[in-house]
Image 1 (cartoon, helix red, strand yellow):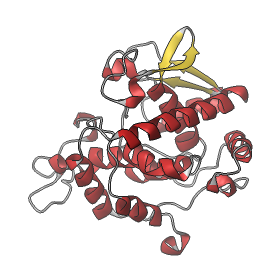
Image 2 (spheres, helix red, strand yellow):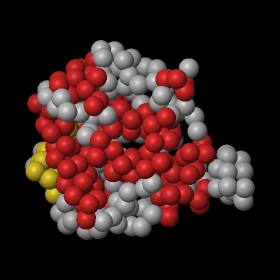
Image 3 (cartoon, one colour):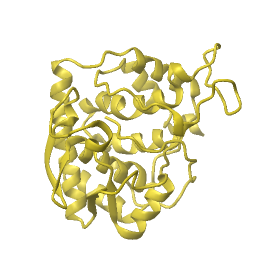
Image 4 (cartoon, one colour):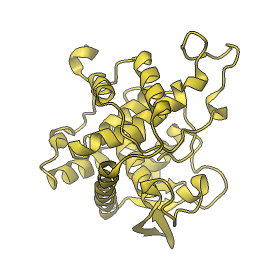
Length: 271
């Protein structure tokens, strides 16, 4: 369930990892040895950069656009597991000294992903743009499972499950290995964070992170008559700052799309 923020800033390249966050991730994964990603965070190493595949982004966006608004009972049960894992990750980072605070001022807490990462690396504090400000009162469950209230409260403000989820995603997805809000940066951030969850949750995380990103960049409303994304200067081009945000769906997509996405990080494909 995406919270509104600025997308489209460029990647910074292979920036140095935040060794403190890598250590927190390593400790967390050691505490959950059943996760197949426990091997993933050797000191100083991140994933290979994703191989570019614009057609895959278009295909994922089309599938998300055509998906129903809501999932079935099995999907709802997966969301319950997701909220438990999010809370465990949140507790791990805060126990290690990371501060997560609600953003109470007008607008967004960060101008772009570079601002987010620079601020976090300097202060050890993450400011969260609350779900209630982007999507309405988070005290009501509404139509999305992450709209419900979590057990987390910061500075006297209760967090929705979505606030907890986006906080740990920004920390482990974007700040740990300096991944941007651009397409490849978001793909890399989703991959980093995916490996910190049990495999049954991967299709759900794919919908929540990758599919929404693809719709924002490659949705059918952004394509030309040939089915290709409009570029800056093309008739009908819409700049990222003026684009609509993804509809909040929670249905699972075809597993084949997730498998294609995962191959983008295969080192054999990137060599």
